[in-house]
Image 1 (cartoon, one colour):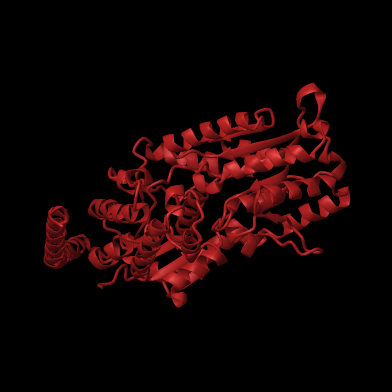
Image 2 (cartoon, rainbow, N blue to C red):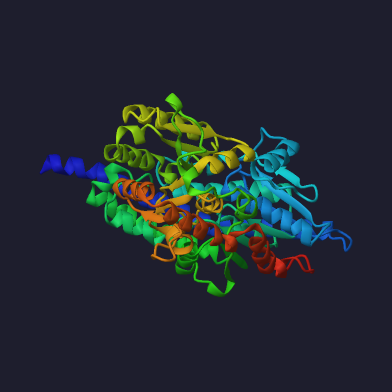
Length: 505
C-alpha cells in the first residue's frame, strides 16, 4: 500500500498542476483575447476610415495561398477573377498568395499556359510569408485543428498587409471568415470545394476504417477511435460556428452542399455553383469513328496501337492513385497478354511541392512492384496543350478518389469524349455520372475489382455502344461550363459588388 501511495502522490500532484494550468490559461484567454479583439477591431476601423475615399475603386481580395499550382481549385479562383474583372471593370482585385518563389508575371503566365485563362486586367498579389502554418506536415497529430488555427496566423498577416472591402476565401479556410468580418470589417464570402470535416469522415472513423486521414494504429484501437470521434465532433461544432460567419457561401456540388448545410446550417446563404470546366474547348476534340477505337492511336512497341486510359488529377493522397494501379493489376489478370500489352494508363497532374513529388516516386515504385512499369506513364505539371493531347489520344478516363467533392477532371475527360470510370461516391455519383441504361454517360466503381470490371466491359462493347456513351457524356457536361460558373458566381456575389463597399459589423 505504501508503494502504491508513493506512485499515486506524484500522479495526483501532476493532475492538480495540470488542472491549475488549464484554469489559468482559460482565465488569461477570457481576459486577454477580448482585449486583443477589441484593440484590433479599433485599429482596422481607424485604418479603413483613413483610407476612405469616394473615388477609390472597390477592392476584392481572394484568399488562396496556393494560387500557382494550376489545379481545379485554381481554375475556380482565376475564372472568378476573370469574370469579376469583365463584369466590373476597374475593380481592384487582390490575391493573397504564399507562392513566394513566383513573380506576378510568372503566376499570370502559368494561369494562361496551364489553365488557358486570360485575365482582362492586372491583378495585385500580396505575398504571405507564414504559409507554413497551414501545411499539414506541421501537424502530425490534430491536423485539422492545427491547420485551421494556423490559417488564423496566415489570415492576420494577410489582413495586416491589405485591408479589402470584400474578402472571398476560395480555399476552404473557414477560420479566417470571422477574422475579416468582425475585426477587418469586410464583407465576407467563400467558395467551398470540400468541407474541412464531414459526417462521412465521422462514419469512417466510427467504423474504424484505416485511410490516409485515419491511421492504422488509431483504427485498431477502440480507445483512440473514441477519442478521435470526440475530437472530430468538437471540431465540427467549432467549424460550424466559423462557417456561419460567411454572408454568402458558394459550394461546388450537391455533395458539398449537403455537408455544409448539415454543419453550417445556413441554407438561405448557401448557393451551389458548379466549378468551371473547360468544356467548350475540349468538346472541339473530334469523337472518332469506333473503328478508330483501336486504330488511329499512338503506336506502342512492336508496332501495336495503344489503348490509353487517362487519369487527370493532382498528385495528392486523397486522389488514391494506388487504387488505380491496383485496378490495373487486377485488369491484367483478366486480359489476354496481346491486349494487355496495348493498354497504357497515363497519369496527368500537378505537384504542389516536395511531398507530392515524393508521392509520384512512391507510385513509380509501386508500378515496379506490381510489374506495371511498361503500362503506366506519368505526365507531371504539363501545360494545357499537352493535357489536351493526352485527352485526345485517350479512350477511357479513370478517377478513384473517395468522396471527390466534385470532379473537374471527370468532367474534362467526358467533354473530351472519353468513357469515364469514377468512384461511386461524392460529386461523380451525385452530379456527374448517370448509370441508368438508355441514359448512361459513364461508369461508377468502388474498389479495384469493380474498376477493372468496368474497363473490361468498355473494351468488350460494340462500336455503337461505345460511341453512344461517349456522345451522351459530352452532351451532359454543358451545365458545368465556364459560362455557367460565371453566371452563378456573379449572381451570388452581386450584393458584395454594389456600394457601399463595406459595412460595420
